[in-house]
Image (tube, helix red, strand yellow):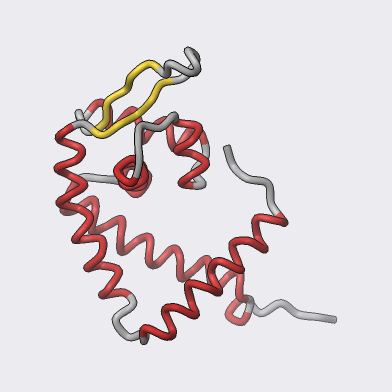
Length: 150
């Protein structure tokens, strides 16, 4: 009989590593900026582009509708994100960063990059390049096996 050993099962190991990294990041964002991970993800994605619908944010962040909605509400309530009617679809709104949201992003982004550097400090540049390429292939393979959230 084939026996599964979790400590050797790569999907499990990847999940554990992801949970540990997420926990470290979440603790930092919560402590320094009173932000939850989903809230930071929305801020970061909005900061990279233009105003977006919650549906587009869900697709960009791979977070489910409920998580995106809760994060958006929290950010609007804090005055970090603005909601405006979507001229292309009256059933949705466009979310964009307020001035306070832009300012927060400018404070968080350097901390996020420093945290990334700390987490991956023991990994060479070549290894990071290889790791990023492997992650892209793993994500693509997993996307073929599982339907997208939305």
